[in-house]
Image (tube, rainbow, N blue to C red):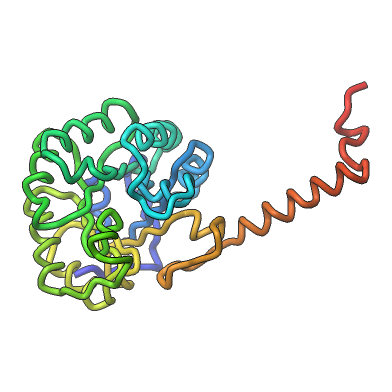
Length: 276
């Protein structure tokens, strides 16, 4: 069971680089794990400097960066392009990269090859794979190849058309079976998306590896959010499970308006911004 000690957020004895062993120790010590998405160098550098434990180069970039309606259009090459930037920026954070659709759905060897590209072509450290029990053989093959795997159970955005939309997942027995199978196959962590609080707790109690929740309640080993949602740099819609910690979109809009006004009124560039 996870016992999070919110009064001791960062013990001094943790190593500089967060690894799979670090996360396991944090779970054992009851220290909450922080995780956010990153898709570019400056964002990753800022989040890493802030002390975020894990950076996720998520296939969510298809929606929040590329402007698509689902995560499905983003390609493996595009994921690697963004992952390479994030991997170079992160000095302490562990960096995990999503296997995009359909790299995690086709033949297992293809998934192993795609995962190997993440480690060979970027400075990232692990991959994330949607699925549980039905993905156990794939997870085992990737781990056997020497590549750490974070499993992803609950709501699976890559299966949005099968599910008929983004829905809360309530199949307790299946979700437990998925998480247990993923751990037994070698996954170092299980991400749990969009489940009732008590299911998030039950999954955390059922496995010994860390669990990361996104819409899974507080009784997990850590939390993840899409950074663009967390800082208010999105189109306006926020899922129920998001807490917005800043309003970057309004700040950027206001700055751009002020910039345009300064140009039109002749206030910019002034003498201070001009060469003699």
